[in-house]
Length: 189
Image 1 (cartoon, rainbow, N blue to C red):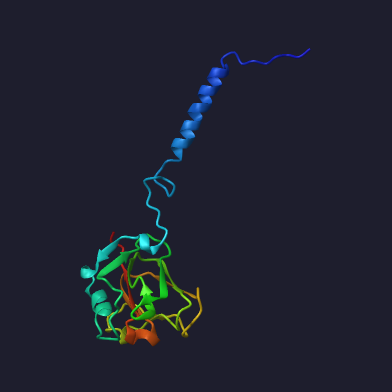
Image 2 (image 1 turned 90 degrees about the vertical axis):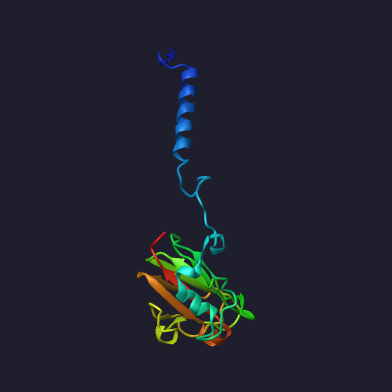
């Protein structure tokens, strides 16, 4: 003999209603303001970021717009790409500009302290990334070097920037052509 088990307070309609309510709660719980939310801003590249006028950072304009040291960077348009809050902003080394593949893209970036910046080479030209405050208007806040001149696609150099300030950098063999860049390290949003 088979015994039929039933629950006296739960019928098919109750089960479907409960399942529907639980499903709605589960979906609602997933709709916060994270990366998958329609309201969230997902940044796929540096091109998707907002820009700020460089007027508040005159050293950036002085470095990139003039030929006081090296040539003027013809890719600099008076704005700074706002990458604050981005974990690993990437700057292209050997981008088109200054009469050939001799530019950093973007040439001016603002980041938050503790940010790891990546410089990624294209396959065009022999480049390096050097910050030497004594050779760059004497006002840069940090010295670093990617080392030897490299001509290798996807070569990568990274630096972590902890302290607020302005960091000027260049490609040594192409400084006279205007291959210069600037980082502003600023926690203000």
